[in-house]
Image (cartoon, rainbow, N blue to C red; front, side, top):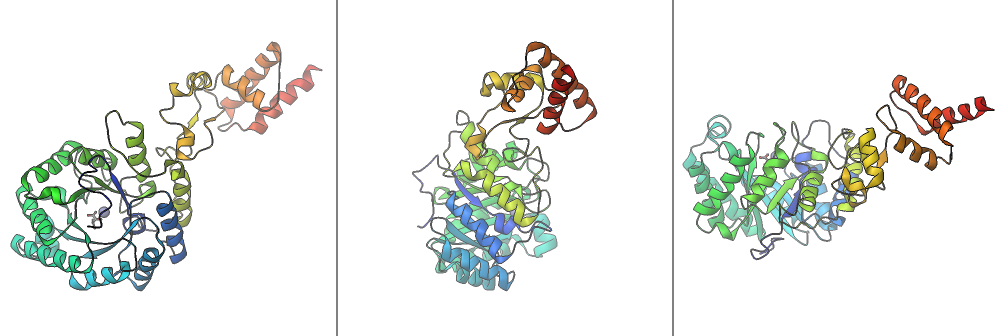
Length: 395
Ligand code: KIV
Ligand code: ZN
């Protein structure tokens, strides 16, 4: 078996990045061939275990970029997505065949809503499709992932029959997506537990989470799924993806790294590359990263309030639970504004090369507060100007 995780490696969580597939499905986030290669290169270098490089049947461009990513990847498994349709599976197999470690990822809907309105098929027909398409994929590659689209709105008894059919046909990874971002963490955790307890031979496959963020629960649900026994997390850089997006890779990885006390798992991603990867994906998709985005937002390591700045100057762990360096940011920034206190102001002056006596410092601080009340952003130049002005008027 070519899977990146073995049954004995029970606490290792493999990171499956789908920025180039589900991420690119986000309206307005399409990437050129060269941009996709650049993103794939950084993912491969930072130690992402599996890169879903695209949906080869979708277009000639998608096929070519998946094939090129497959040729270039040095470490990661390269996956191509396929619907449960023989032509899709054949095309995905062709696209990934030059990868050192190829994977076909095939999916079919399992929920009553999708069966009735989208597939127009019975439960029994879908079970036959699963058996046939997974077997077809397994004839092409050793590493086959099967996904139950809309798993979280599928009755558990039927979902268990689908999972059983996929494992019997040779699936090595079973992905149970929260396609519409509907689940809560408790429900999602319980779904994995039930599948692993009730499906015969469940231990032959790695279970996988894939969560969308429609209710803002994608990361929480992903971690709950891991607690339920899943050992693959599907996610994207910056949480890019359909509608409200997918679970953000950087948040999953840093949650596991930071909270090992309650999330006792290991991941292989080099975290110091997270900020670079985030900036690259934002630049090539022209999707800005919100300022207050966890881990990679501009404000993730910025402090403005006086109390926080004072604590940070004394000991960084007072208000930071991870170091900026650990995610590739050179240092914490103390943003000067109306909430800043004397301590931070004095440190800022020192950094700017000023050494003021007590009275001059007090005077400069008062004028800084007046300025900060009027001006939203106070830059270093503003502080230099008000100190220089004070020195001139004092003479
Ligand atoms: O959200 C979803 O269900 C998907 C599948 C194709 C895995 O993206
Ligand atoms: Zn998805």
